[in-house]
Length: 185
Image (tube, rainbow, N blue to C red; front, side, top):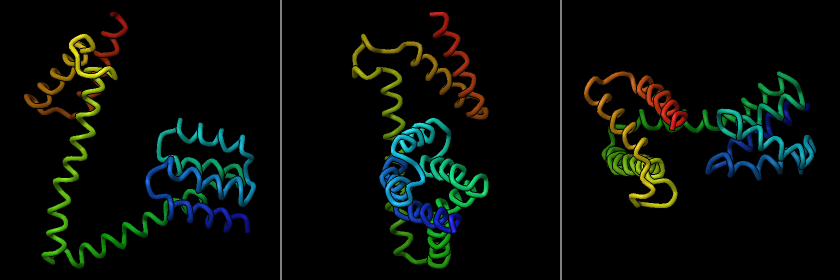
């Protein structure tokens, strides 16, 4: 019975947590603390800390943590599966619909309209990260310019464009070189 409650609780969390991990926290608190009393409020705050520290989505990390706490390893598997199942179902249905109707001009029009928006969102995030890295939080001024970051960025961009190596190797190399420079300076 506890396994079914665990699965159903995290299935609901996975289904209704739209907007990212932090948006899921009130849903998780409602299910785990208020409704089922599986954790105290203090334990829930510890859960948030652990879920944010570990790699991966907060809701899935929370499901794994609560599941292991309530029902051991099977509970972790059940809660995690309950949390990811709604997304798997929704993506599968959307993929089916896409492959069935992808030749329709309306679908092609919608996708053509979304492509520039997606590119713009990714570019915006990249420019924001670059600005923060190069100028810091103080804004655009020559006094706050991080010359080491600019040099590392320009060097990495040059290497990527000239020799086209694996980007992960370039990132690791830049991280090692940057770490060494910052330790020496």
